[in-house]
Length: 283
Image 1 (cartoon, rainbow, N blue to C red):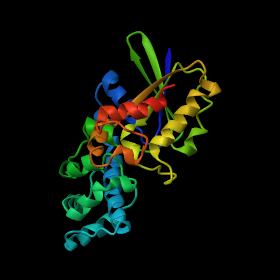
Image 2 (image 1 turned 90 degrees about the horizontal axis):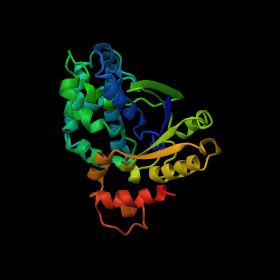
Image 3 (image 1 turned 60 degrees about the horizontal axis):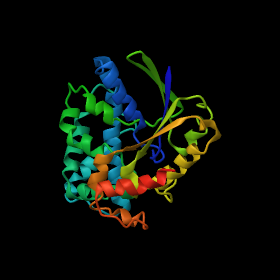
Image 4 (image 1 turned 180 degrees about the vertical axis):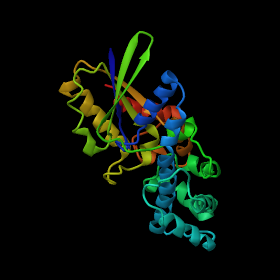
């Protein structure tokens, strides 16, 4: 039996939100086939909540960044969003909520705030869900594979997933990435075969959710160092996985890496940037 410990670092979720849970979902799709209808149904409330909360985060950020709505008539839609609970329940998204998100997403002020999302804590899937709001708000909505993969629930504790490839059984453990979660798992996996350490490389210009004085990439480096030098993992193989490359490519031209890694002297290309911080992870 092969045991893999999946360790995500950042968001890293800043040392949370690195994408470890998404990797597990992808493994399920690849090795167990598509989600059943019941499984898809179970993700609806999560997706509704992710979508509404992402818009709420943007609207709150607009206040702190002093960015006004372009169309003041949209204040009605702002009120609709703020009236929603943190967890959206039900088989369908309320029509007025879907309409509010659709209208607000078209507002130039909201778009400007979204462009500055590195300055606050916004779900990576926000744009995807906003662009799909017409489909998500439909009465007969059923999440597709991409909707499920992009859904976000904070990982707490330890979650195990088992799947079979050929003659081998793989046990994968998804563990919480936030600082408060680490003490729950670091000593539990002395005998694992491999640690898959995920780093959301797109978060080079973002701060931790738990501590907005700490850069997420620096936190990833610190955590990676502690794992590599931990007495619990002396005989464990470690795989470094740089995740969220697509988002990283979008951000790099408008958010220069040198602003956050002053010692970087290379070209402004994704490949060069990957090589630079990657060297900090290699011993």
